[in-house]
Amino acid sequence: MDARSRKSAGVGGFPPGADPYAVRVDALPSPWRERVRVVPAAADLHRLVAGEFAELLGEARTQGRMLTVICPVGPLDYGCFVDEIVRRNLSCDNLRTLNMDEYLDDRDRLVPLDHPLSFRRFMQEQFFSRLPARLRPAPENILFPDPDEPERTTELVDAIGGADICWGGLGITGHVAFNDPPAMLGEATDLDSLRRCRTRRLTISPMSTAQMLLGGTNGNAAILPRRAVTLGMYELLRSRRFHLTLMRNWHAGLWRRALLGPVSSDFPGSLLQEHPCLNVTMTRLAAAPPRVHTAQATGEESSADA
Image (cartoon, rainbow, N blue to C red):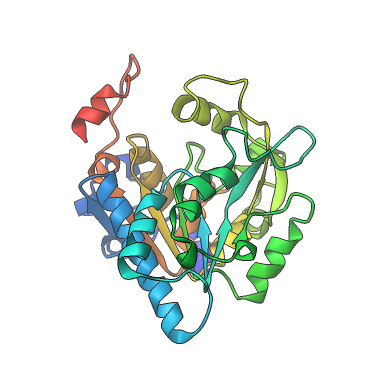
């Protein structure tokens, strides 16, 4: 049995049949102990990631090469990126950003920039337009997957041998970007098909829509697009580094399933176990053992704990 097959059957260092949800961070098995760090709160996580970005950008400038980063919307505060760029006076003329995904309208066109949930608008408002003009990346280096030609993203990733780094979180289904469990998407459910899935258009799963209703639109279902274009697990996992960031109370159960459970297409984030350079940063809130609330938590309890 090769290494990939062994991991698919169970995580190295984690006893088969044990309950991953009961594991505390300080008792993680040795494969993960040196890869996982816990910070006090989300602000600390944002500053840490921004510092990592600035170090990589400065290193790439010194080496005279492009830095290609895969960016999510949601788990990161790009204001901290702006602060680091300005503080270090770093030009982004060698920066290429590739966003994970974007919403589509019912005709599979990119939602317009004035849509409240446009990821393109979010990146402009929260990152690029806040930079001094002299430090901004070139417009042609600010990339999103194209619903009309999704294969162009795959071609770029293949041409450069993978992005330098991908930052990302986990959705409630274990999704990374909009890669929900393939059974929810009507896609092939075997692991190799999930590993190979490329940039594509898809219908967002009901569970991921429910997550956005709870955390993104406060129950406003009418505003939520049904479709999206997303990078596939293939492009994400080709990144030379993957930095998983976790900061929400419900991440407590998800990262334990992703890192300590079986590698399975039922939980796409479990494929991160196979990445050769995965690091994980989580807040104390996300690190805590998952709490069970029979009457359902309001969210205020977790805020107090943080």
